[in-house]
Length: 242
Image (tube, rainbow, N blue to C red; front, top):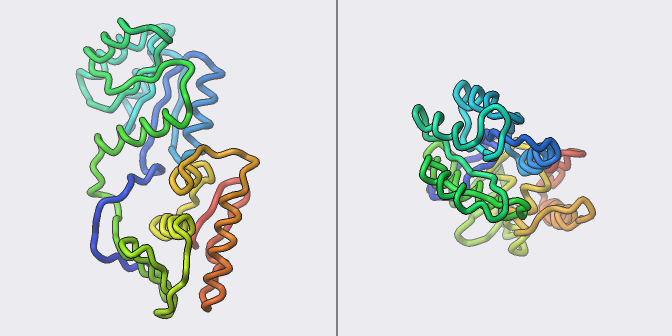
C-alpha cells in the first residue's frame, strides 16, 4: 500500500524523526522528562552528569539538547561552551527560578532557549517543537495538501474526505485526526502526541476523547465501503493507519 502525494506544502514537523538528549542530574526530573518526551514521540537519550553529557553530545547526532546548568563533574555552561566550538545543536537550558544571571550567561555561550523549574510540560513540548521547526527545515519531510490512499482521498485545503468519489462528512477534529494518521501512514503515533496535535491539550490517561473520535471516523469510513479497521489501536502505544 502507498500514499500518492500531490501539491507539496508546509506542515508541522514530524516529532518522531528528531532525537533528543537530556542532561539533568536530578534523577526524578530526568525520568519525568524522558517519559514526557518519549510519550510525545521523540527518541531520547539521558544522562546525569556534565562529562557524560559532553561525551554523548560530541559523539552522537542529536536534533536538540535539554541541558541543566547545575551538573556534577562539568557544569552546564562549561559543557555548552565546549559544545559550541564544534557544533550548533539547539540547546534549551533548564534553570532554577530567579537565575537570571545564569540565563544571560547561557545565552552568551550559545543557548537557544530556557525553561525555569518547575516548568509546564505542555509549554516545554511547544518550545521544543518551535525550536526544532526553526532549526531543522522540513525539506526532507513529506508534506502535501492532498493525500490518496487507495480509494480514500483526503484534501487538506478543502477539509474534505472522499471514498470512491463519495464525500464523507467529518468534523474538524475527525478530519485532523485522519489527516495526521494518513500523512504518517505506517507510523504508530502516541496518544500524547495526537492529543497535543489534534485536540490541542495535554494527554490524560483517563481521557477517552481520541478513542471516541477515532471510533466515529472508522464508522463513517465503513459506511461508505472503506475498511475503517485499518485505523488501528496499538495497545499501550497509540494509533496507526496500516
